[in-house]
Length: 420
Image (cartoon, rainbow, N blue to C red; front, side, top):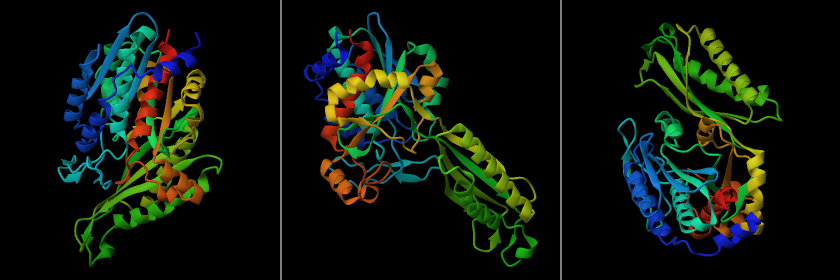
């Protein structure tokens, strides 16, 4: 049979009951939870999976779970969605906006919202489950729906793997995932190769010698050292990276001292770095170490700087073979709304999961910006300033076209391998 043609017809048949998606989405959106705190979200997803003929494997990595749909012989397809939210106070003004306060790791309270669209990701995957469960006569094999916690701090995928993921579910022949992003709502954007950048955060501690603020000559001022490092860091990308390459080195935070009249004994700089090429990453990290150590030496720092790498995300590098298999289905199902993707400097930990299974994968994006806002911004050349982006307090996907596209895209990709 012609798989793309039949999949397009199946997805337009409306046999699956997806009426649960809107209330499920609004409930998740109104009650978000931070990374590692997703207990309520986990329970809601687990309860929802009870309506389907599947085996639930949980908990994994804290509040992660897998729903395994077995349907005879055939390939195994894994689809992943993340479920955590961000420490952002919501400013969307919708009736189901989050007003919750949650504790950060240090105990301080913060507003919380689904500012990255993970509520949409979970809702779409639940819809994919409903479609596959309702159309078992049209496919054969095994489908694994993986709901992952703690993506925002880049720990969730590895936590599930450390909790025995690869031994507790069938090994997938292919892994799939998607992310809602700024773009015309309902567009499905796919591409081979590098999709999202590799990233690391680096905590750098520089040491000095404390003294009274009135006696700087008796101190070695780590605040000054940190300031000089920050200035020099700007030259790493601008003067040491080939203009044809890509690299980002962002100073995310600087901390030094606790009062006005004491020169502190240390200062902390936290960097966020992103790359599409591992060789470029190695060169940049070498440069960062060199200039940090040089500034410490120049100021007479009493001991070497300390470097702590965390929040690691591998490059999301789509398999050309999986792309060439799935893209024709997207073109058939979405027509002109199936478009070429483009790489993005954002990062996430999806690729850790297929790497653990040594499985090929495809990860694509779905546009979620209301058509009028997107079209006007494109016409005015103001996309960078007028379109809300992920992690902003006013970020909110246009529900209907976004959930329909995300649900159909996931089901279409899975059925490309499972349809029989």
